[in-house]
Image (cartoon, rainbow, N blue to C red; front, side, top):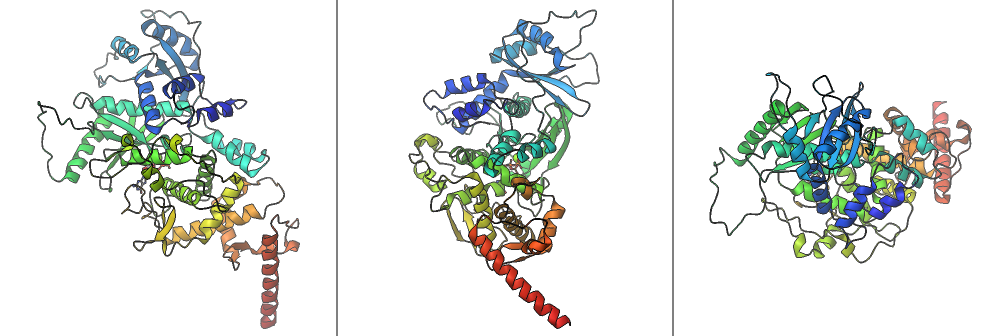
Length: 577
Ligand code: GTP
Ligand code: MG
C-alpha cells in the first residue's frame, strides 16, 4: 500500500515493470484526500480499499484472453472500471478481478449469476465466480473493443535470481535497498486480493451480523508487506459504537461459559463455516489454545494464506502506528525490508512460530533504533509525542480498555527530521547499535524512545507500544537473541570492510545462506569492541586480494587484532614445541 502519492507517482516513472499502480487509484485516492496533498491516513486507505472490494468481483476464466468477452458481459450488466489478471498455481488457473463503478453493479451481476446444476455443491453466493465457456445454448459474446486489461499476471513475484541480478547492477548499497523494496513490496493487485478475501468472510456472516466487518491488519496493510505476504484478519461482529439513545434493543443470547471458552466456540463455528461453505477456503486449521485464538486457512482463489481472529481492534491500531512510522520518512520502509530480508535469508526469522524473533518484533527494533539520535539526530518521534498531539477524532479505546489514542494525521507533525544519513549508513548503524545493545538489563520502549530497565527477566524485551505491560518478544530465547547479536555484528563488519564490488556485493553479501553465515561465526572471534572478526580476513596473505578498508578506525582495529593474533600464534607455536 502506498503512502505518499507524490512519491508513488515519481517512482513509477520508468519502472513500470515493478510498479503496478494505476493512475485511477491515484486519482481516486487523491480526490479523497483533497485537503492533504500527499499523506493518506491509514483508516482512510482502509475505508477506500474496503469500498473498492465491495465494487469488485473475482472471476475464474480460461485464459487472460477471456477478458474481452468477460468485459462484454460485465459491461452489459454494470459499468466496468478496471480488469486485472492474475494466475494461481504451477499449472496456472487464470483469474480476473473486475472492478465496477458502483456496488449496485456487483449486486446486479450477482443477481444474474447462478450455480451449476449439481446436488453435490453447496449453493453459496459470493463475489467469487467463474466464467462459463460459450456453448450451443450460450452463444459467444461480441468481444469488447473498449476492454483493457490493466495488468496481466499481476501477482507474479520477482524471482530470487532476478533480485540478485537487479541488486548486483546497482551503484550503491542505498540504491540496492530501494530496489529491493520497490521490486518486492505488495502491489495494488495484491492489496485488492487481500481485501476481497476479507470481504468474503465478512459477507458470509452478514445475514446474522449485518454490521460485521473483517479488517485486514499486519503487513498486508501496514506498508511493510511483500508480495505473497500472509493476511491477518480480525472479524468484528458488530460496531464498537453502542447507541446510548436506542429505545428498542436486540434480544441476544448470553455467552456460554467464560469469555475465553465462548470465544473459542465461536471461532470453531467460524472455522466450520469457512471449511464447509466458503469457496476457495482450504487447509482450515483451528489454533484455539493460543493467547489469541486464530483460524488459519488458505484462500486458493486469491492465493492468500490467512490468519483470522476475532480479537479486539488493537492489531489494526498497531498497524496504523507502524504505517504512520513508515510514512514519516522515505527511508524507513526500504530499511525495514532490507533487515527483514537479511533476517529471513540467514534464518533468524522463520514463518512458523517458535523461539525466534518475528518480523513484527524486528520491525519494532528498526523503529526503536530510528528513534535514537543517529549522528545526533533521530529520525522518528516517540509514540508519546504522537499521543500528546492527538486530536479528539484520534481517540480510540478497545472494548477491553486498550487505549489506542495517538495522532493519525502526520501532516500535523511540524518538524520533519534533520537527519539526512544515507540508507547505507542507517543499515550499518542499525547492525552496530544492536550488536552492542545491553539486552541483559534494558528493554526497548517506543513509547518514550529510550531504553528502559527491563521489567522482568527474559532474553529480549520490547514493550508493546499499545499495551505497555506486555512484551511483544517474550517468545525469543537467549540462543536466538545471541544469534541475532552475532549476525548483526557480522553484517556490520561485512558491510564496513567491503571496498570492491565482487559478485555478491553490498546487501547481497549479508544475505549469504545460513551455512555460510554460521561458518563465519565459528571461525570468528570478538575484538575489543565486541565485533566479530573472521580470522582469515586478518591476514592478507590468506586472501586473494588485499582487503582495503574505507574507514580508518576499522583499519586500525584490524591492524591491532592482526598483531595481537600473530603474537598469540607465536606463543602457541613456542608452547607446542
Ligand atoms: P509478516 O506476516 O511476517 O509479513 O509480518 P506481520 O507484521 O504481518 O506479522 P504477523 O503476521 O506475525 O503479525 C500481524 C500483526 O499482529 C502485527 O503487525 C502486530 O500488529 C500483531 N502482532 C504480531 N505479533 C504480536 C505480538 O507478539 N504481540 C502483539 N501485541 N501483537 C502482535
Ligand atoms: Mg502477517
